[in-house]
Length: 309
Ligand SMILES: [Fe+2]
Image (tube, rainbow, N blue to C red; front, top):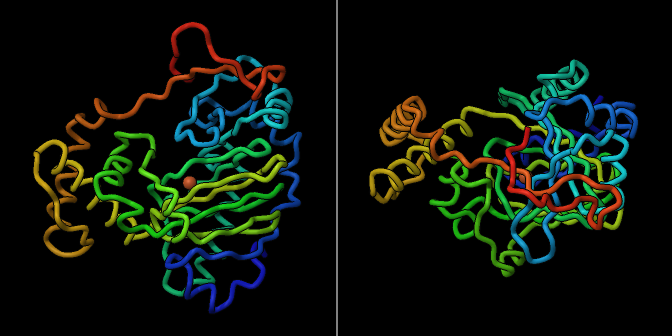
């Protein structure tokens, strides 16, 4: 069993409120330092991002090149610096993760009557003591599983003014890399959770969130999935974004039913097929390189930023 206490109450809250449950994954050898170091060395660049963690008040992060460092050295830089490692889409490249994510969603669908999920993805986040992830939103349905360390997460309602229409549209169309507007007073409306090893948190689709680690290295698992309603929401946001930015119209509806949805779905599909989308997609470039001896665990590249490979 992966969950402890996935009962009727949890089933009723799933997807509609931030929901915390206990899980049994923390002790797996898959998440030992040795296993994580091997993943850092072996994962292709498409499945591994190393970032400098955002500093207090700053709403940005910077991409880091591994610079030929071993996995153990990268983990050492994370332990002593201000970095986070994002290993993504592990189900595509590692059978053990493919099996794990299949087991996870089988248990979730068994626990939530009527729920059908698809396009499961699984990743691992390793982040420095005190590291923070700025206020952002994710496009698919998201779940965070704490494996080691402690962190505080603020989860905000997925509605105006916490999530503005033009901003979620840009995030969905990947025009911006998930940057959305944040005001400190939003915190009064957040649900705050202190996560420890063995805690899982699932929140409503697109709910903005931000994270601050305690003064200890954190290892977390992320899973994501799609459902029929989340797919409809995606199409509406995408279609509204095209209408607003390319055709100069001001969409008034975020409805995910009726003829408006069909029109926006068609618009989204046509736009994506046309190739226009690629022209607008944000490009990721490395401005730093991992260095365990440098302050923060990375040093700035002196030459021009280069694409991350
Ligand atoms: Fe997130």
